[in-house]
Image (cartoon, rainbow, N blue to C red):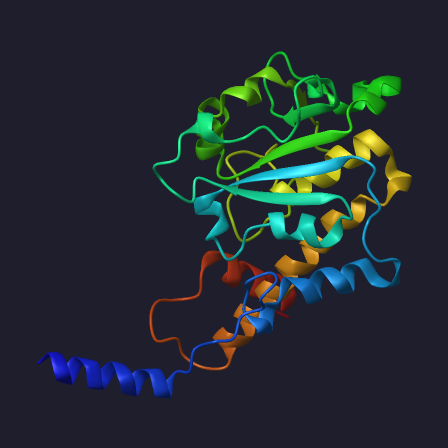
Length: 246
């Protein structure tokens, strides 16, 4: 029995060769985020942001193929992603501070709460905030991350008021005010550095990645019957929007 199962598995592997992934964004080459972002940025290249962005990414979010944090890393000159809790035994207190003692005033965390300061209200004081931390996870897990890492609560907290609804058509947001990580970073940098900073291009790059993903899935669906299931609600809606009935 075991040998037959192994033989069938080997035959399946030959019939369905393993897809090739981009080593940088880890997505399938057919929907490589690097190409989507490069096309959206055009000849202007990466956004030259003055504020350094540090994305603390939950290990579960790192494994998601359609996460948006990679867009920030690809589109911004000053952006770093750090994956946390790859080892489930790791304690929050073991997560090292990205700054030395005495440098806390130049750091802040994007965290909506009652005592948070709207980034657009900083005005002349925005120069004091040189490093912005953004948590990349689901809203529920991000809350757990925030309270799990003790030094995060010691930093100044900031919020943003979204100018528009999220365009994250692949993943459902908890409410109309919630944005993807890439959209949050884009809005935060616009509030800090102004619209002339070019930070809007981060959102445009994110939109391009989503468009390419939907186009690829729609092509795959229309090319033949699926082995399992039906097209998702997102794909069905996208198909109707792009090919309206006469």
